[in-house]
Amino acid sequence: MSTHPAPVAHTADLVVFGGTGDLSMRKLLPALYHSDRDGRLSPETRVIALSRGGLTDADFRGKVDAEVRGSVPVDDLSVWERFLDRLHHVTVDVSADGAADGWRALAGLLAGHEERDRVFYLASPPRTFGPFCRQAAEAGLVTPRSRVVLEKPLGHDLVSAQAINDEVGAIFDERQIFRIDHYLGKETVQNLLVLRFANAFLEPIWNSLWIDHVQITAAETVGTPGRRGYYDHAGALRDMVQNHLLQLLTLTAMEPPARNDREAIRDEKVKVLQALRPIAGTEVDRFTVRGQYVGAGDMPGYLDEPGSTPPTEDSRRVETFTAIRAEIRNWRWAGVPFYLRTGKRMPYRRSEIVVQFKDVPHSIFPGGSPNRLVLRLQPEEGIELHIMAKEPGAGEVTLKPVPLSLNFGKTFTNRVPEAYERLLTDVLAGNPTLFMRRDEVEAAWRWIDPILDAWKAAPALPEPYPAGTAGPAGAHELLGRSGRAWHEEEL
Image (cartoon, rainbow, N blue to C red; front, side):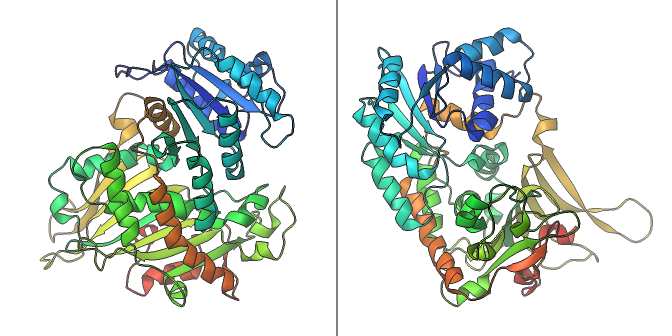
């Protein structure tokens, strides 16, 4: 258990739409339990799950006890029982004619607690965001102390994202809307800001004079079994690059904000997105790569994943891998490429930012290699600074790259919280710093849309790569053309 003093907890009613779904059971409820266990929830705070399941409170508590308890450390049964007592369930179906009955039941449960913060967490498909907000308002449930949390994906292009923002924005003010990206809750991401802006030695070299290039990777070993229906309409570019990877890019490249302020940080992130050099037309073939994994060994290809809907002609055009060379048009980063890469069925599970520094201007030692800074988000969160050191021994000087390593799990004795714990704590406290603003989401889509359009118009299919390998050959050529290589190729 954390040794830090618990922050002041605001009493809130947290209403989770999609409260019995996969996200809720795997991420949200375990995160809330840990918050309860560490004293970050006030005694009166309630968690109200909404679903179409027709469950009673007792049914829902039994479901949580059966499905969640085994995934969290219950070392004090009284704490677990206290957490279960917070849970309630109301049946609501926003697409049904009889939805009014559910809204009345929810209104009855919330009645008399209007002074509390009221958080609506929409762990549901984006098509439900607008109808939910409108019906909640019509039922009189949206108060001045209300907030709404929107899960990704926020639309499938700029137009659909703007439509969702308009629908939700008609009910909630921008200050009440929290667009969540769980990558921003990871300790390493938050430490990136501390590393950059609380340490004097990095800022003088955090620019094009000293940095050769930056790599941002989110690689997964899993495929898409049972999820082709979703992935056929998403693909790697929408699923990972538009949100996760661009968020990591903005935090890496942003200018120092004037203060650690809720809006100042988000202002600087938007400026980075606006400074991205557009990739459109014929340049898409030069600066982007898309691939789709095919069967290899005992691993099926994307079109053959078990439990999925039958593949269509559109399925053959879906990218399960993409790599992009991005450039930022400003004084700090002019000429520094940012390589973004994400893929399914790769040989490792890894999310990291690699900042590759330039070589020393004149080396007096043979065999050296440039320094690099590696910020790893998963599987083990930490920071490594690779420097050159002399290998022990008599005779000639032999250089060897050695990492100066900060592993959060080993360095800090208190438990490293999951990303959703931090983000839910910030939602309950009303702190939007780690959440995306409307202009930020739409700026990301403006950069992504021309790439999607070019891919859609291109006759060529995604380049195949065997499952369990590091992506298609084109991804390695993307860096190889300038004499560079992906991080693992240099190890």
